[in-house]
Length: 321
Image 1 (cartoon, rainbow, N blue to C red):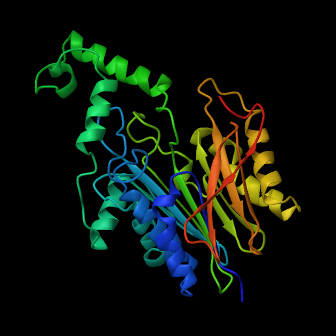
Image 2: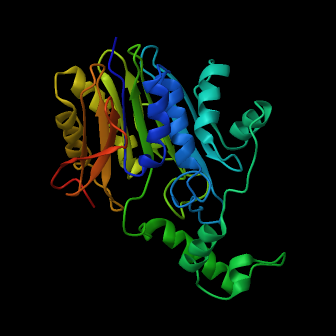
């Protein structure tokens, strides 16, 4: 029997205790990962995942999520989903109910969610709306809200300012970004899941690495699992999560594998560079993480833990923005 363990990125502590109860009682890693991320998606204080996520440049919350099973490498994901507060559950439904596909986006993902009976909700909270309006305050109230009239100079200026924000606006100070959860259950199954509302004020329809297999999420029971947070475009270009798992397969320990991926991604030219982070878990329960800034951490729960333990990530020089 395998000793169960669950790890997660910053802010996963909102969901790990409930997920650990599932693993502790002999439940599956798949159930645990979904439960952890659902709890995070419901955390209204977190503006980078689920309900309350910061919206795109048009003021609409679009969510991405994925989940992957190590034994089969089955993958389910959704991207650019509006109105559905638990994209991780819709992603799992893609994995289990629509095995001929792996990724659904936008209207198609919403159609599938409706067919599965998932409930809709208003994802843009008043707090997130106010943050969005403050960030895009470039003129009168009319330029923000708009009217059913021909665009004037103020409307054009607003759209140009919104596009500029897509290129340059940085998140607020403190932990932000995608949430990763990786779990190993008593039966030896390994599962990883990712959920996010994406980069704040992003261009509408933008999909980052979280919904892309091999980029933001990858899981192979032979070698291990990995997931990424931060600058998703870099992770997609580096196939970050798969690169970490490949390094595990080559014999690296988890922190070294994570650091190698960040070092590789740091070689890519990117005028919008921002920090990228990653973490990994092996089938025998070893784990580790890396970041482009010192002081970064990740969460762990296993036998004997009543609350998540905070562990340091390996800091990789030159891997941040």
